[in-house]
Image 1 (cartoon, rainbow over the protein chains, first blue to last red):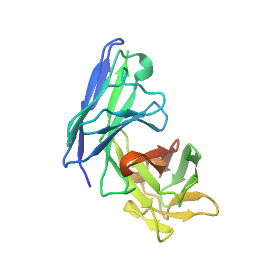
Image 2: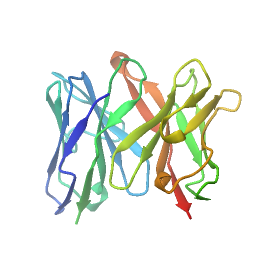
Image 3: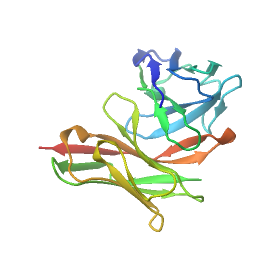
Image 4: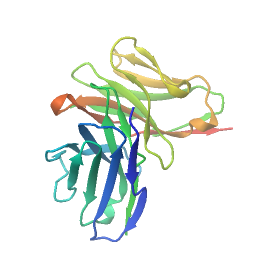
Length: 115
Length: 116
């Protein structure tokens, strides 16, 4: 298992600004995942982040909007840039442990409201 | 591409009644299937998973699910609902990505309400 801490847990931001979300894992993991959960909707993968390499983005998500850092095996950040109200969502960090499709572990999420 | 359909965005049951949350999947390969629960203002918690082997899988909090390949279903059940079961439930299928890792494709979710 893995314990994942996300900061901040929630924030209210002005449009046009940026917010950086931090994700800390209590063990070393190779791959980290960032998901978005828009209000009343399901989760969608934004990108995967491997330590020491650039993140890989899913269709519809771009690096300029959601830059990701992965400086070591226990930490990652996701930045939501130039925010608009449409970015209001819950952003969740996730890791997969145990090898294979063992199921992912999630942080508690960051609830972002853009006004 | 794989997909997940959860029938019923809202389900309401009485305390002590059977809980049945429906999930159907579409997958071109043998699927790995998951159920997650999300309590208000919290992240997702893994309830149970099916990878291989026994098609009836048991999870935490008294939940279980049965993988039925012929029906492409993975419905979640609990014999007797408890007030604390009120939450959002997500069915998911894993999809292989690079490096042997897997991303999750989620259904739209089902909000379970339990009333006295």
